Amino acid sequence: MQYFFTNIKAVIIVFDVQNLSSDLLLKLSNYEELQNAPFLILINKIDQIVEPVLNEIFQMLETDKIKQKWRIQMCSAKTGLGVWEGLDWLDKNL
Image (cartoon, rainbow, N blue to C red; front, side, top):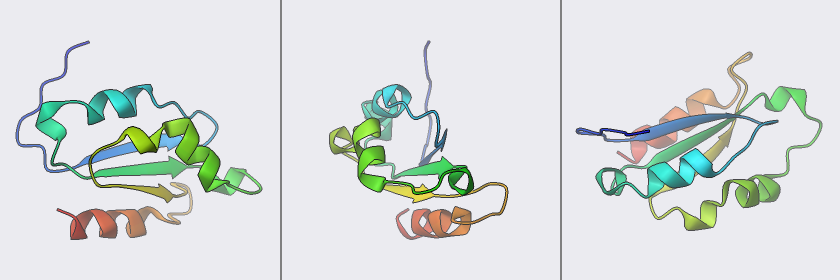
């Protein structure tokens, strides 16, 4: 698969909390065109789990390999919880 990027200022990636994979995240973080773009990583459906463990999510997504500014924001698209907080962070980091 080939990606083409032009004038990208930020990257927003949404993961289902039950289906986390670092493949796409790490692939995007390695593109030269995205080196200055902050990454907002939304972890959706937190309302469906009993206790989200952020350290486990960091490990699963291999965030230690991301060179850009990044933030993981737990959220629920269903209730809106956490979505605006993530977008606010992104706005402040553009």
